[in-house]
Length: 559
View 1 (tube, rainbow, N blue to C red):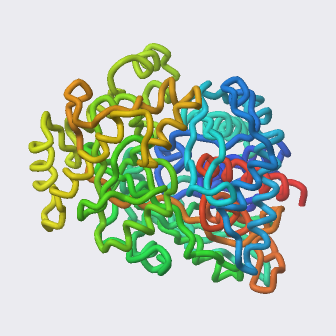
View 2 (view 1 turned 45 degrees about the horizontal axis):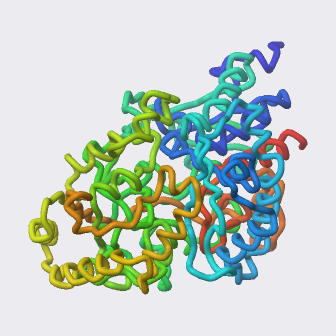
């Protein structure tokens, strides 16, 4: 009889675990199982080029608490402060939040404890300047990060993935892992109330590049068996119909047109399969989308959008030309801004800024938009820290359909009108707001809370060095040219999903584990069906995949 570990993939159909999805959460779980000597099949409907899933496209930001990087910059953080920020943002208020809250507490302990050392053992390093994302809604106990916690991985998303891909590939070489690309799961196999495997269709080979649409031509079927099946297939951000169906009234009306921050295959199919097998889906109305989306001038997937990661200085106007109220400044409150803009009845808004601001404050989300950090290129990084905007930002300014660049305010407003086919933009009010705001810069005092926030941000060494421009008049010719950016809603993350216990076991409607079924990453609401509650603190999505994938792998290995 053949050694089961050395049996060829064609012959083998039984494993210790089957993992649905080859993204970060699934790879982390598989790495843990390989370390335990378990046999694993990873099934993924996309081609091999898409190994790593959404994490590959990410900026690589990770939430850490009281790190050496923070302390070197004079940031005083603590687990108690992070917990207060998290709970103030999550605003847990439902009976089904019990497990999400438990996961949140466990994750905070991880982020303030072994997370950094665990990642460094796997070769990850961090950019020395810690970013300050989600600066908050304006109160000490409300939403937002009280201090900078966004640690950028040296290597961005691909750098986060690399050690886990390497471990899985080593397991593949040792005969412990089967990576089965072009395998689309259509059904979880259930016997005697337990999930015991997966069934689905083999899809025709496809040389589509990473993230691009691939064919759905069926060439056969498959049936794989294991005592543990892990759903690690992501959320629904690529399926706008599901996003609209889940959209809650509290966020207003979803716009008719949205950009996609994730590939089209992030479609939520596996969530329905898990529910059909008895798993409880919770908090589907909690979601995380961005309002600073711009159309990609070089798209990979349909409606491909890129998010601007803004500093706090750009003036923000709704589609009609009204300035957004405090504290809805760039980078402060993602969902607060989303709710405000959705209630205007229009699907876009505007930034107005200067060349001086774009050079200091604009970054673009995504590994491909940050070749210096992604490629660990010190020469390119030095260029980022020097004068001028980063190359990808300048290319968007030159080629992007959503950018207006002008030498005068009259020319800028004319350009904005050309990008306003519905003629709802009150450019006269935009002009009044810019002039009034500039008067507030002429002295060191101000009633403009955005200017106060900018000056406060520059008290942080990291912001002063590379992130926040000194306050200046927008109409100062020396700061020009003037720039306007038309912004769109960009779909991204599901904050709800399959409810799980702290061993990543999927739970049924009565709170009991569904035998054999596990969930991790976005499919599990990053833990418990919603560890973020209503709002996230950023840097917590990749971290949630790492944490839940690790927990799932270890729990399955210990069966």
